Figure 1 (cartoon, rainbow, N blue to C red):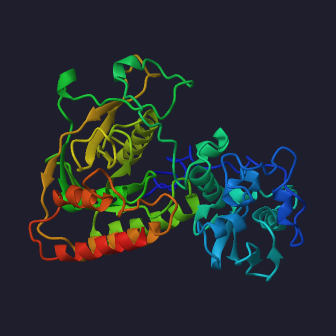
Figure 2 (spheres, helix red, strand yellow; figure 1 turned 90 degrees about the horizontal axis):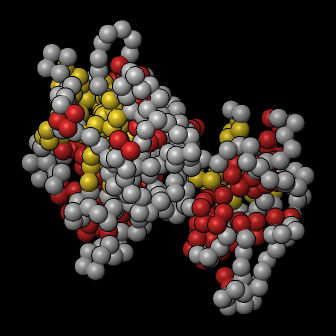
Figure 3 (cartoon, rainbow, N blue to C red; figure 1 turned 60 degrees about the horizontal axis):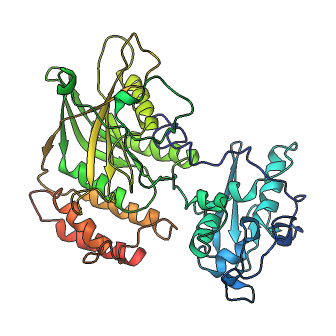
Length: 447
């Protein structure tokens, strides 16, 4: 069974999710609260035009607390709409409409609230009367993404020198990518150290380097790599997905036949659970088993981090099950935009984790390089094309979506780069590949 905590759920991506306890004092709940309460609290005032144009607007220095829904609407980061706002709290779901003036209408009662904080506090108190604040911008989601992250995107766009707290937040789903992360060798890690950055990248070790044989063989189909590579290109944030296939105990061959992208944001456990149920059904209907997972490092090398290593070790133990049975679990890391890649093609690296030596139980697991056989599929299936369309629609309009009409380098757009990367993963029969052009056209229009 799929675990809603990982990889699509909060478990893998806990580092980017805002904690419920991370609250700030909010005004008393109720529809009558004014948005001004979020604008001018002591220490959060509206400054005058640092390098600006004067007269309010974008020239003014807005802090996180000074940015309102009206500001985001004015700059087209969000749009008015019915049912575009949501709150999930203690199993209860609240749906709201975003009005053109930045106010919120709660669909269930028709009440109008002047700010996310007012609505969140009001709703949460209905479920938990002891609740004193709503943590509105971190609790209310616009089309599945937290409003607080749209706020951070606005600051990053208009005030690149804004306070560090705003810079660190990044766009929805974005984990701090730590540009220029230098991978370390496993032998330099030693025992576990809580002070060590969990995003530290670790070089993989080959089995031959430690005089061991790879304990299983791997075969992966071209359609798997095509779909996960496409998924990884769509956003500057990390993506995750599952791998379906079969394990043959006699030949010790793991065959990876299908990728199942998670159309959810990292840390969004509510959506992740629904998506994982859908994937579980798809695996069952196709007669496939869960054999691994993939995720992306958009601008970093295709190497596992310490966090990835621990996650992979957990997944291996879960898939292995009880008793003496052995079923491997494969991890793939895709790096679409890492500047160190050779040319436009994404780097996709498989790895598996070997437990640390028994005499050193407090060491990290050892990330092992996995050799795999690439099998070119005969044709591109309709369900792969359908999944690509769904992914384009899911990321459409997101603040972190890649703008494929922009230049990737001096000669190629991001769309050109994507086409080159996918070209090596297309099937033998080019019959349906003309449909890919329709997907590319959608990408240009949606981004």
